[in-house]
Length: 107
Image 1 (spheres, rainbow, N blue to C red):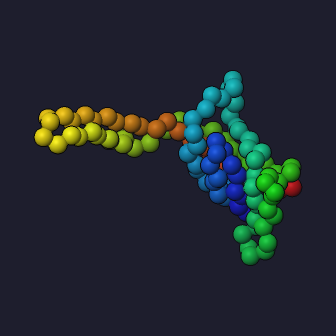
Image 2 (image 1 turned 135 degrees about the vertical axis):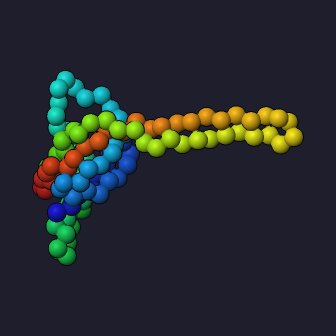
Image 3 (image 1 turned 90 degrees about the horizontal axis):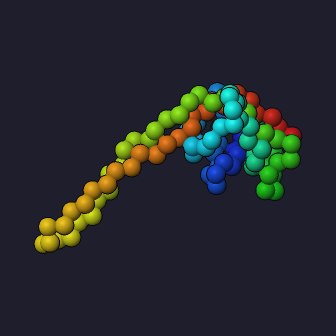
């Protein structure tokens, strides 16, 4: 079974057991799980027709267990102006929240 859900403006296709990196967020208290209610589609994966929402499926949700925090790979950017001796470099590493999908509830 698979589901397509929306989180922070991004659509993500997941199966049960997948590990996904999401945008970082603050987690209330000692929460170990997180639930996503903006489910766009749910399918069985066996060739039958998927349930598609307009825009979201009512009553459907995706439940995930929080694994921890992760960082993306370092990205390097630079500025350069020819013949002027001007060079600048900057780096960036994105922060992610790593979650493991534990359940998909279809409407």
